[in-house]
Image (cartoon, rainbow, N blue to C red; front, side, top):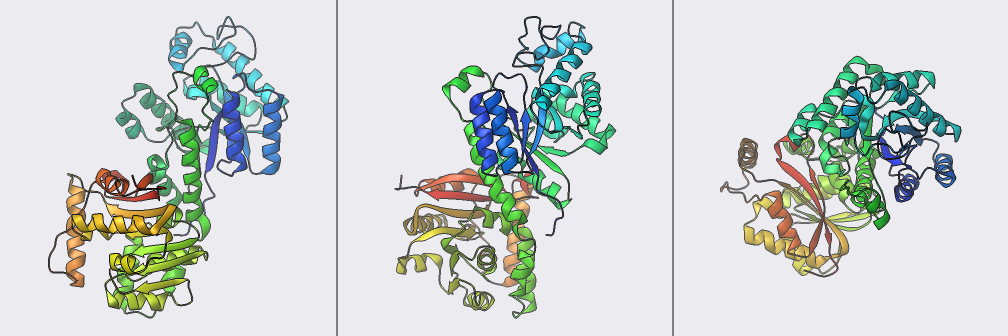
Length: 493
């Protein structure tokens, strides 16, 4: 799983549009949740205080990249009245820009003069502009792209955002404008490949979530591509909602998703040799068992489970099997103390051998049996591809037992297959039957999968709150498997 690509550029747009956007972006920069800021010159909140905050953020983090977010909408002009805005007030949305621009009522030379003034305003505050983007992506429009290219060359700005994510995804979104702008972005990428980055976040703009971008993010990381992720964090206040009443944005939720994204990226980049280190611990077991563990590690995103599992404290591993997940997570964080339970005595013996020297212990019994007789409390739990083997009432009982043994605020991480009416699910079921038959562990080929909605309901009615539901990368298109994290509530519902 070695990757040479650097961490993605995570860009917070709209700095300068409102003081509560500014506060949230600077908070995110301080916490390391973003590493780029796109500055909107005409928003009315770009004053000396805002620029001082940007300078302080850049000093604290020399890798922080600052760019200009060119505007033709939502704000007041920098260059004064023109065909762009006779009264100085910019148009409210790009849908109003397009007819004025292509009917000739908005002149391109006025746009160039205005955007030149916006760039000079940001540069004049001492900002080293590293990239150009635009509010509502208007710079992608024919004619305006040429102006943007000219500004890039004139002021030696090395990058222009070409926010292409997926034409197919844009079409499926049902929005004509999103599809059209994705088409324009794709054409610009084909023509000007030297200035392109692979973009994420366009198709979930204003409602960013890790789940929405995870599949493409992992694919880009596999291919060592340079990535930009666009986000729009803000502290939601009455003032902000009054200023932008039509945005319907999930500002605060985006901040929570940025925290999750940081954990996911940290786990992905922390130790690319973690799998190899874990597998070396199984060198003393039979070859067939090693092949089985290796194959399972390729199908299950243990790095993602590692990202969602608490970094310290006691972790209960339900159905610990050969102990791969326990060893992986213990090697990832020495502050974890893993307790595993599995009814297969042979697997448990291999797990104990592999985990020698690590803070991990294994018990050859069913998870529910251990939870019943051992009353210690845990800070988290891992339940990886094992609930589906239990009858529905057994699933309910085990989750209830977990809820009783996890401290409030603790996290249970579940990885399970999503039951749905599709060929991919039928294939997954047949695949599991084949694996079980090869291992000759059980004569009855019957499994008890649930849909994602049903897995969530199972956890929530037993005192957990859903905090993350992430599709397994490389399988998200088919919705086969999900990794879900649930926080233990203070008291059962």
